[in-house]
Length: 138
Image (cartoon, rainbow, N blue to C red):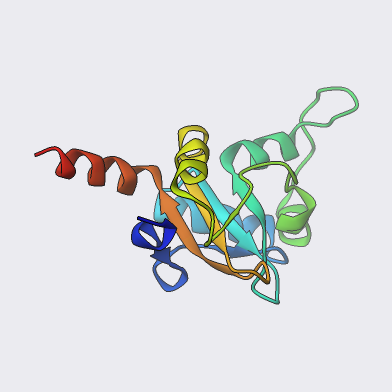
């Protein structure tokens, strides 16, 4: 068994581009009802995952813990890449072993999967792994 068995391919995944605006990101997240979404660049390389928390932290001023005075212009001008945290939801290569996949899935709702060129090819959801294990033992 390998990662490809569990893979939900990119064409079935909701994702954002790093140059999308915060407003577009919020609208996409609200429309689909997700709490986090993978982010890719113009070369289709995985660059991170944006979450509801990232949007909320954007609203809080780091210097004095006060809320930013946000307006429509600021959420349209600020890009997703400006609020991404580099260490959040790291990707795995399609070639990793099942043990590494399971280790990541324990900590993340979904695991982004890339090829050898770091091109985003899809995700593995924790739900898909659990469903497989439940069905295997029926």
